[in-house]
Picture: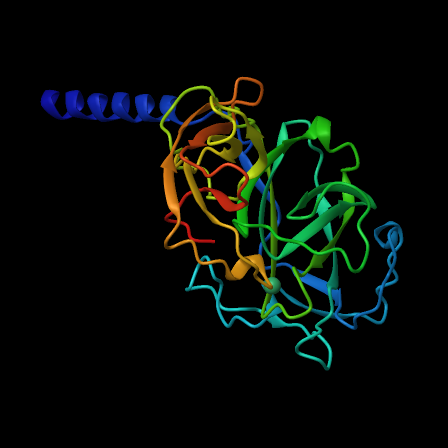
Length: 318
Ligand SMILES: [Ca+2]
């Protein structure tokens, strides 16, 4: 009897301890406010709705369907287990498809006092501008500046999850919010279109990435193109030619290829397989550490001759 009581006491004590470990607050850390498979109204008629369409879209005659929306792919290119939800149209001419398709949905946002930001998930082929209540929240794959129906897009990773603080989303309000998205193709002959958008309220903003330290190549960064190529002069300027260029942290190859000039119709057709190869070096850019600055020098050039050159990662033959 005495033993039993001791055990009961022990069990009770353990239970109290476990209860003490349970979170005391009922507020969730994450609250989904727009599911990735939301139903969207859409305009796939190839009608140019103009630059300010998101401010008061008249969607009464639009079709609607569940995300993912698109055409040309039966399943997601980033998740083969995810089938397309709604097939949208692209017009009569497969070689000249509609450049822009418009999507609108409404979502309920609760009081955000307990939250610090919104985590967005977007998968878009080829690019998009996302508006909340008629004001741009962000864009992917579309250059800064005014966006028109014929503006082309290229969002290289296609899929991204990122957070924006509430301070940077002043257009977001408690209650019904209208999310409007224009999805652009990279060209009229593009074979596919894909669109998914998810929004989750979060109580903590993720730590900003420290670009100044860590592994290179940075495994969190997708390979992208080369930018800001510039010629520099090194040593004997009649025989040597130096180059600098920038890439993101995904690319640590500093290859320079040079070959004699020849007439070609299209520079994409140039065959660099027989080109002279020079290996350079790279460093984190001091002014913008998320970029790498590459340098390489071609030597032994013939004075007065013209050459084709290209820089980047020779293994990435583009
Ligand atoms: Ca496409």
